[in-house]
Image (tube, rainbow, N blue to C red; front, side, top):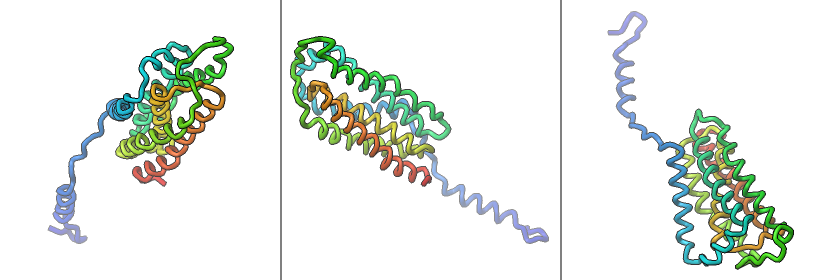
Length: 225
């Protein structure tokens, strides 16, 4: 019954019931570790598709060269930690300090790659099986990065991150590191200064494009401009 002011409690109750009747259960997202594992599994699948191109014997010999082995380890560790950090920072309420997680393996990756330029000083006359100019490395890194970037942006957008640019940049770092790790068995390189610059340029482009384009897409998903 309406009171003197014309307020009808039953009217509001009907409105609440109508709104509640339209609600649908929200399925919670898996934990960041699980989502990162799924994305890394997709990257591994790409590696398996490329396995036919791998000269296993030559790759094993190259991994006995300290700087190449450390660079490979750093790239893989960077991909794993950056992927986890991206998915962790995509969850509202999670600390932005997760962005620091991939820094140690990133330093290892960069440092070991730079050591390759000094190999002649460290091991004079060292013969690296399969070493040659890296024509095509740039295109390989970019081509492999495209599907991995699309996948990680789609997966990250479901969480509506509050720091879209940071999350997207971390995703870009994960993509770049994964692409570099997948390149090592397929396309041996001599780690010259030119080679290092080619890799650095490709990695920078991947991270920048993910940070800019991916950040805008994630921002729209979160309702942020």
